[in-house]
Length: 433
Ligand code: HSE
View (cartoon, rainbow, N blue to C red):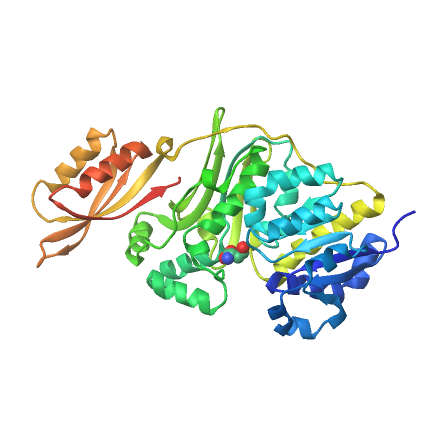
């Protein structure tokens, strides 16, 4: 006999969980119609401090418990929604839900990036579903397309702006010429940055999300520690001015590519052509460009964070799990195999480079720099002398190269930093044409 109602247990009452609770209560009739029976919020596992949140005041106090055992021992919870973020205890909660045969829904990028494969196995062993649409790109449909609509493709590459906070900061630096610290402060005031903004600005959040995308896109095992990562804190307002003069925008991109033998995955600032689709993605918006052998290039664009967009994805996962439960279908998740793939070391990648150097303004300096680059088989595509400081007798040089190997570039940069004529290697940014 089909179930007469589906019980949901919610863990957390922060921005995401509060948004989910609100949708489950306010849209209960529409959801019941969609699923064929009511979806009932049966318990909310909270911390004592959550009870002070405005959302708690709007809800029936009998829903709350601070006791983990009481939550998991409640027999009428069919779907556990974890929305507390962070690795622990979220991982233990998801393991406990799946090992007791409950379907699990999570918005937690860190847990899925680090433990997705083991949670998937646990779900399969227990005939349960593991759903994580909200873990990347907030409300943007991404996980389901990778598991369904794009499966006929060999995915060649994924190029993504998947952190709204850093994209907001870079947009302000580019459009208003403000420096990094001022732009970060504004992002924090607006409530965009993570509790620890280091996760955003050092690219940790993007790395977790790229791990999930690469896992699904290439059906391979990958961990955040396999991904090369650089944040945005060393970008200066003048880099944006020079990049624009050269026809480029600067974005923090999460890039994953696949070739015959290996995959490459990296998160770092890049110069991208100003007329490319991703260059036009401004503010807190996210965009994910997927390149498949059949579909070509498809772009997913939208709000990557916030209570409403994220609850759109979480509630969609709840509905999907509820359908599986109603139909007695076990887990309707569509998983591919998982190949072992070699991850290309960063030293092996090849791109073009932008660099900004502060050098002595005297004859022969440019020739010395060109020789150092030439010794490492790096060819210059353009070199421009920007500002000159007559008092200090220094000048700023902006150099763009043709494609070169990262290892060669790092060696050349190391040598240049020790040259008498080079006061400072002020910045160095990869270019993605
Ligand atoms: N801090 C993240 C961002 C939130 O800025 O995109 C969503 O994961």
